[in-house]
Image (cartoon, rainbow, N blue to C red; front, side, top):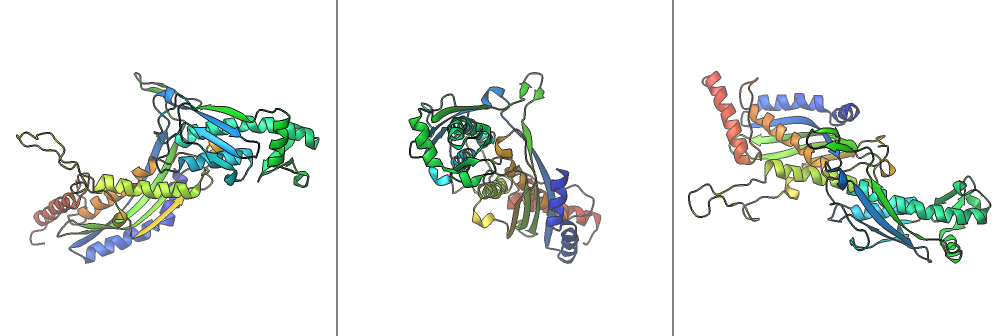
Length: 381
């Protein structure tokens, strides 16, 4: 966290920009800017220990193609792509050789929910376990052909060769064909359970998480003192995903999580009927006409997103870390920047309260209170 924090402050030029914000606020009585940095430390694993398990079924066919089944649900987060990449890496074949079947409980039973940001950790571990079994079977066949020990066989880019001698390689498809005729098992069921977890929900003691995902964000906003309307001028994010399984997917997840967090903290207001009529207690903001979701228009004008380097996590599939939910919390810096901007309308040293979600209306009333406090402290201001 210390390394990530220091890197982000340097990348975002935080100290110099803070001075620029103070200068802007001193020169503009009706517009104020806020700049805030906030950290994230997010534990990864299900608190209910039994959920931290997953299975997978991997087939290798005579033509060298690979079919994988796993227990995770794809909902646009790129899980299927990551699982194909795990299989391709474990077997040393091109990604084009790997296909994925839809998630089915008649292939992989007793699946855990795809939740708690653990989809890639659990299912990736199961897919790798199945691929490792198949690769061990194939290595025994290759060892006989190449005249080496099975431990000295390497699988890479569709070729199989003795360690240190890529010039003596076999083609992957040829090896699979030969293995089939030698009656070698070319399919495997994989299983993974997160190690080291134990949690007493009653005593609230134990080790509920495999690891923590870290992140930090710097957000700068500008607020209109007459309406409470605001814009996000710039956001700088740095997030820890370990050794990324798929950097483009993870960057997209960090970007999307931050924007979703902006919606959560600044737009998505739930309002309930508080009247004494027949609809009392019912949700009033129940459609797109009354409930505002974030869109491209809410994107920061300048959006810088990076993944922390040299952040390998031991004991997880290929050193990666979860990326689903933690980035949502990066948007807390946007809310804090809005609160700082509201405080700038008032006297220094005064605590400013700001409701969440920080809608323009909520921002207006927060800055109105700050401005009222300034008038009371400095009559005629």
